[in-house]
Image (cartoon, rainbow, N blue to C red; front, side, top):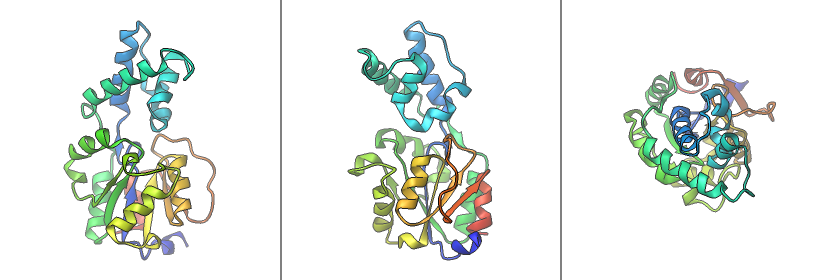
Length: 222
């Protein structure tokens, strides 16, 4: 039944962090640099991995144990973003199997694009550092939208710009906001269990869960 849902797929839209690229190591490095500057203890990858997709503010909360009401919060968040811009492509890498998965889509003449909540100034240079992502037809970031995910605005904009019906598109992501956005757009959603997000139970018949990128080829492509 699930396989039949994807028979007419012409376009696959992907989330970025936790779906195509493992950016956690560079976020950890950046956060630990800010912690060190403030004489705090370093964190381990396991401490922040499930918070990567929640944004820089969440990482400050985890690292410093403070919230937005703290007078230092915005300064620390700004420091983290400055560090991250310096460390953007130091250790980030494609998840195992992403290259093969994208090759499978290409072999089946299925296009792909990227719709992310990562701001353009970080997303574009990160994507450009991977030749494997050079065939992406579009990059949609919050900078281009009124509402980021979980709104479906970015996904629907990508479909419109590329000229492919959303009903012939599926969205692939690792976080609850990705699942919600894909569902709101009315398309099939591929939920990446290997990513960062802690996802809720399946909601609806149009959600398929995968444990490895190459599993996407079971449903789309060869």
